[in-house]
Amino acid sequence: MIKRYSRKQLTDIWSEENKYKIWLNIEIAAAEAMEKLGQIPRGVASNVKKKTKINVSRIHKIEAEVKHDVIAFLTSVTEKAGIKARYLHQGMTSSDIVDTSFNIQLIQSGKIILNDINQILKVLKRQAKKYKFTPCMGRSHGIHAEPITFGLKLASFYEEFKRNRKRLINAIDEVSTCAISGAVGTFANINPRVEKHVAKKLGLKVEPISTQIIPRDRHAFYFSVLGIIAGSIERVAIEIRHLQRTEVYELQEYFSKKQKGSSAMPHKKNPILSENLTGLARMVRSTVVPALENIALWHERDISHSSVERNIGPDANITIDFALVRLTNILDNMIVYPKKMLENLNLTKGLIFSQEVMLELTKSGLTREKSYKVVQSYAKKCFAENDNLYDVLLEDKMVINKISQKRLKSIFNYSKHFKNINFIFRRVFK
Image (tube, rainbow, N blue to C red; front, top):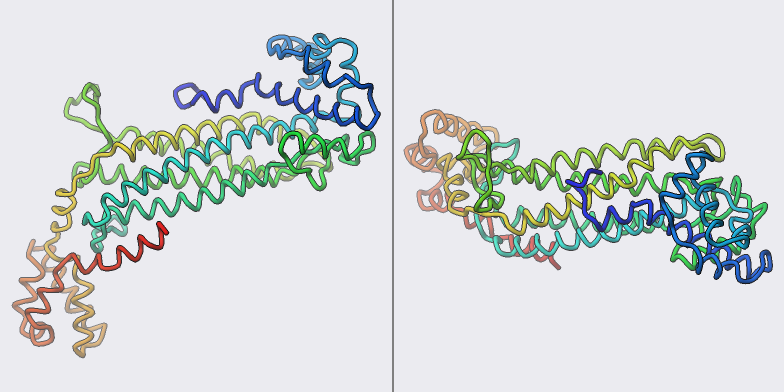
């Protein structure tokens, strides 16, 4: 990923330096197990650990000649550790190192992303409670529907990110496996106890059955979860973008004192951060299909998945981390306009109370069809002529005969729409 959309914590995880360090840790752990089993001389693991320092440029130089990254890595280790390093990688295959390492990088990334979600949950919880009873317009199809509160909107986002947190925990667990099973996964030239030791040493579980690789359905699940999280990020981002439109203007991204909105129009304050999140979400979701297609490989292994993972591994994780941190900052610093929310609630002059008028007419004896038709006809009239629905209904003798003026007036009231807000909040924030 480009630096513009990257944080150091994640780029460090996906650096060549970190990858080769993980490879070295795997080789040392495997050597320790082989020493205990008497398969290689004592002191190999400690010697390699003591003498080896990762030299990325040297590994790349060797790889340019041998055309194999793991061989280049092992050659570079031998150059530093000496002849004892020849005992490394006994009975192992490249995928044992590469796959186990890839899973560790996913776990390292996943834990940071999990913390990112925790931060979003904290901000959403605080903001939801702050605006718990702040009335705003509920919309369906982009059209005014019925009143809700801004806090309720934020609570909905909170609950969704709670689900994302649970999904990510499961996804991290899904890729927390280790395979040190040799060529085609039969343990023909390596003792299964080596795999068990490596897994324990690195905090992983043994892969119950591998071919020459760890099964890619595990990784497909992980990247699918990142795709879902990206969808949730975009859901919030689009809401902010809509609410910041000039015609609505119920909400605004923080705009710093010296910030400029447009090179041409000095008055502009654009929701650029939320728009950016929409774009980043697309990028993360674009990694899901390749991850799914990686599941089906030829026989016990091919490398069609390798080039895909070298791209989507860093790109998806670095991008989702950056996006989550940016979203937290937006939510934490957003500017809310309760007066504008109330103004928009009143924009249609009572049309948003049409459902309860209809229901009250049905209670009085009219059929639902007749009640709907009566209210709809008046709603159309009010919309076309910019009239107030309450005033129009008040002039209809049939309506007043069915609904008393006092009852009709009570219908045109926001408070009843919020009577179960506390109930909903208890369910979400229990």
